[in-house]
Image (cartoon, rainbow, N blue to C red):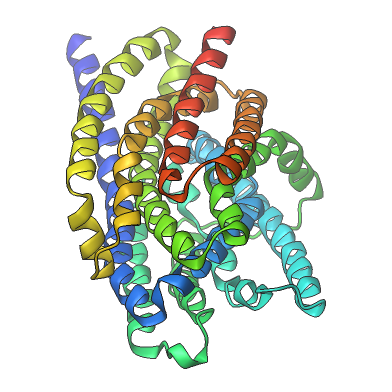
Length: 415
């Protein structure tokens, strides 16, 4: 009996490690390509246009979050629970995509309407539609749920390399900076489509008629989850959006560099979260008492790693900016130094988010994120009105501290 239990433990930990390796590889490839593209894009379009491209990219990803409607999170757990039942797996798989496609079509209608009334910079959003469509068909929830990520890894890496090659070899600055996001989206779109079709064929997923009841169920059950995701995205990007209208292109460009760095770090942390989520969800249902000790041990390791990471960011800020931009930018360096502890607080909050997800506390997630968005709006407005541009990096730090405090308080309240 002990031997069987030991073997189960080894398999369980090996599964988490393999998931983390695979998902970490995805995020590392994302980060590597972003770091490769930073200096190239900046030198081609300039720091002023880079800020606007970053803002539109954030808008497009927010629309992608809306179209996914929380299925990238709820779908992982749902797929993990029915992965051995082809009938139920097929039904869940196609219902998720039917919901996404419906929301994608609605979002396109809105974009076309805004284009028809000639909204400023809407052409940038129009050319970013491939980013939105790529997120619509992104099958990461499926491969994470069944814990088979090798193929997805390869496709994801090829997608990022394809986008990089298109920008390097096809992009013409005279044609307009909006083409940058177009090429960023096209690589993902083509490779995600190939992997999606492979998944349908490989796992014998049978097409399901449009399931109105299933779509309604997702729209209802994920309403708090999508509200949480949108508010989280707004909380992360609100200040960037505000800077677009209330600062100079140079300030927006410098802050965009910080935003891209923190987005890359967030992807690493998301990799860890997704790696443990399927196993933790199943284990939590089997034995809920072990979660507290597990969370404490993991948080200790995360704290040590990201404190060292923060030290590296602070003392390496000048080198980081030079590597990314090819020039010295004191304002960007100051932002990085000021926000060096942001990844530390991000990491400490990640298991709070996992705990709320495995407990199906979608409403709690919404309340926490809604309150945090309110904090972000108030703090962001105060910063724009009262603070000097050199202090804007503090905004990111304060928001991450607030995020950790709010979720910790809510978890303690419901425990």
